[in-house]
Amino acid sequence: MTPASSAPVSIVLHYAENMLATSDQHLVQIVDAATADAARRSGDWLKCRPGCTQCCIGIFSITQLDAVRLRNGLANLEHDDPARAAAVRKRALHSINRLRADFPGNIETGELDEEHPSFADFANDEPCPALNPVTGTCDLYAARPMTCRIFGPPIRSAEGIGVCELCFNGATEQEIFNAELGTDWRDLENSLNVQAERLTGRKGGTIVAVALLGPQSADALRP
Image (cartoon, rainbow, N blue to C red; front, side, top):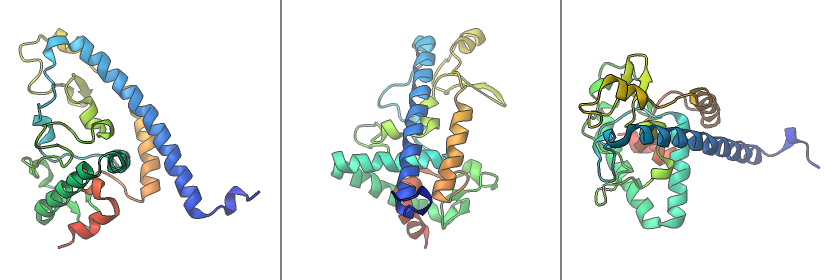
């Protein structure tokens, strides 16, 4: 039997990727259950429906764990629906070509600098590459980032409780508090993101378009 320490690097890497994917699937199940519970408590105040795409417009930061999940989701889509997967990749490439001149961060790796003065107003009208412009739905819904998964119900941050601007219009403060999304899964997410950063060699936030292109992203971003 070959000792684990002498196993080929490719085998060790594949094992690490599988372990991360399994742990992330567990995280997704926890988050989706918490979001479903918050949605139930939100009732009619929650307006999120298929075809409502406001939250799909504008660049936002995603984690390296999100990036790994998105690439796995795109790989699955390539197996099930190659044409749709190719369309997602094409939209991602076109998005990067539009964004590269003003990209706030490391243009070679796609790593964002969220402290950059231009980040707050960066590409607020740019559609997510995963958004299908015909159906108005997400082509990578099962693999979507955490920000997308929890968007809508009230969620607490350092600034207080925030909600989607389309939801809870006219609701009382107590009604908003009663629908608050539980976030006791944050520590698990942070732990898995550390693993994802170690596995990919990239740290900090990135964007969906770069995440989808994976190793091709540096070439796509280069003028």
